[in-house]
Image (cartoon, rainbow, N blue to C red):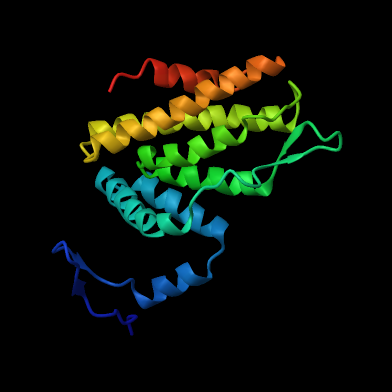
Length: 206
């Protein structure tokens, strides 16, 4: 006997949406995160391009619903080492970066810039050794910003930017934070960690 399916209903935008088959929903609810990732990657790799587009569209819809509940903060992203000076990345930083990656990975690059701006500003006033966990984390953040900017470009090219003023403000806020970070690092003689990000923004023509 085939598994029953819940009745189909219509969304406000006119698209028809059916609930997931009961057995499939049971799988989703009980599979490990690792298994779900493997299943999703396999499905997207073997499916049509339209499937990937539908997946990212669904991801954006979900992320818009949850964005108000996950506001990035500069508090607690770094701790101070035993010497009271050097910064150490925290678990909160990893959580914030995961949020940013979810956003730009789903094609919401502009939304991710606000999250990444908060991370950049959280580094201002900190000190760190040229090699170590903090320097490594900052190099990863630099790469994240570059990928987020690429996501922004695709967002523009895809015609999904309706608020140009808001987009310019998000980019301007990030650029301002990066410039402030550069000045701060120069004062204490450190190595500026956001070179790739700075270049990506500086030569980006909107």
